[in-house]
Length: 299
Image (cartoon, rainbow, N blue to C red; front, side, top):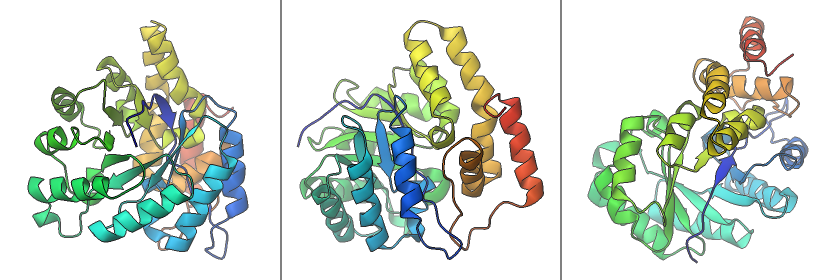
């Protein structure tokens, strides 16, 4: 177990469901095969946009297995294996490791949010990192957990030899600057977790991202970074601004049902959301299509 650099874009892969609320494993595998054709750094299986909270352990393990099996050689497989208890997190992470996952993305525990202070989170991530077979990254997603890990805790955890990075999905650029100030960027993958922060993050020296938009618009997400690194700053910013409304639509206004519908419209297999989430209504579909057309991703 050792540090490795994660540079580029990873989609937090959607999980297609069928009309009977079952995981559609064929559609999932087909998506991986299609994404293999793009210059993505790899895949996050079992992220927030994967509807992970609605998946059984059996389903989770099957999805990890399929991702490892179908991914193109050289693409990273990151598995979201955070659970509420330290013990369950360690168990699931090691099962993911046995299936071939390269690293694990560990969510901050959140149910007893009032108790999730620095001491608790430092102890949690340290104990997990000490007892798993693959490197881990911290997952900070305040929108869903209402827990926001502090720069102080990240500073301590970033020094652990088996904690190789962090995905910050808060969308806060000021906070990203605070995190950057307390980690060694040469030995810690500070990654942005939303396309809304992608261009600003690049200007801060962030080189990796895991973002929902990459499910349906991988080309644009990749091009923002490529153009930026080629010195074409205006072009990178223009692409970022052009697809920004799409990201807002599929991560905010329309949610995962919207993300899946966008995937269906743009050549991938979205499938249905799992209940209690609801599918998009016809007027919502029309509204989302209008956004896709205006962003020039749907002809």
